[in-house]
Length: 102
Image (tube, rainbow, N blue to C red; front, side, top):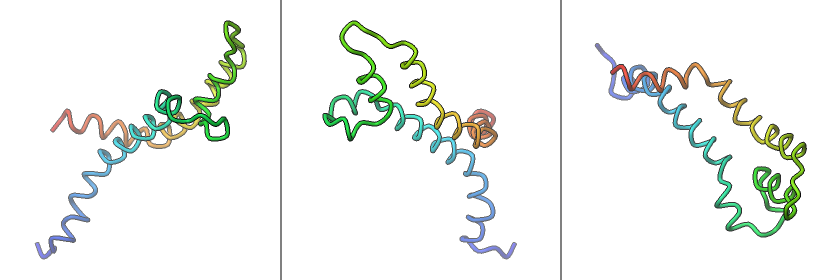
C-alpha cells in the first residue's frame, strides 16, 4: 500500500511488539531488584550493598531479629517494584494475555 519496509516496521510491527517488550522490561527490573544471592556472594563492603541486601544483613544480629525494622525495610524495598508495575500494568496485562490469545 505504498509503505516501505521500514515504515511497515514502525507502523505495524513495533506497535504490536510494545506490550511484550514492556512485559520483559518489568520482569527484568523485578529480577534485578531481587538479586539477593548474587549480592550476598560478591559484595563485601557495606557501602556497595543494595537496599535489599542491607536490610537483611544489618538488621539480623545472631539470634536477634528486629521485626519492626525488617518489615519497614521490606516495605521500602518493594515500593520501586510496585511503582513500576502500577505504571505499566495495562501494557503488562496486554503483553501476558497477547501471547495466550494468538
